[in-house]
Image 1 (cartoon, rainbow, N blue to C red):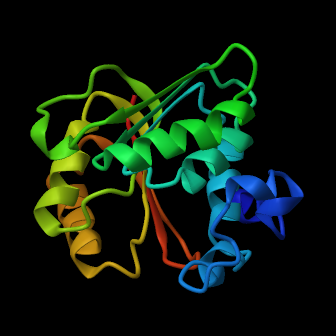
Image 2: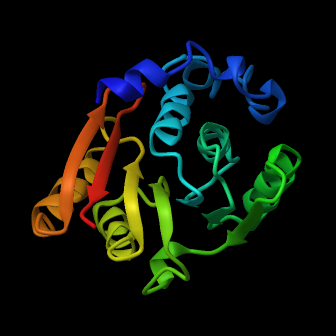
Length: 195
């Protein structure tokens, strides 16, 4: 998908607020945050698909979700699921000032592994929570009939998540229009559903 590569800024800080990435100088996080090769792709993916609704499973501090928010010009609803209650509160606090006017932000403290279906349909779903095989497969199953585009983070760096994603795409190949691998810092895999 050369268009996504062309839409990628050199740095997420060219298009977004540095204060959102508050761990930017932290020794455990600075490499990937400042890589110019991760959040920039989330921005470009959102710019390409221009989703009006986004769900992220596994928000942590909201860096990926923020990058996805930045890329869309039609954003109406942003939902995040985060298992850790403190992180979900921090994400909401971190992202609220940067939400476009008229868009709704709903960050929930929820374990996606405990639900059987999503509460709504979304143009784009980003899966970045449970990286185990079963956890990733379950989260992918939640997207059937509820998403148009699914983005899976850490596809290259997390073997279990990669294997679950590939198995899912094989098992549900009749529902899938196409897939793409974005060669980012940790790998991003995109699934486009038919319809």
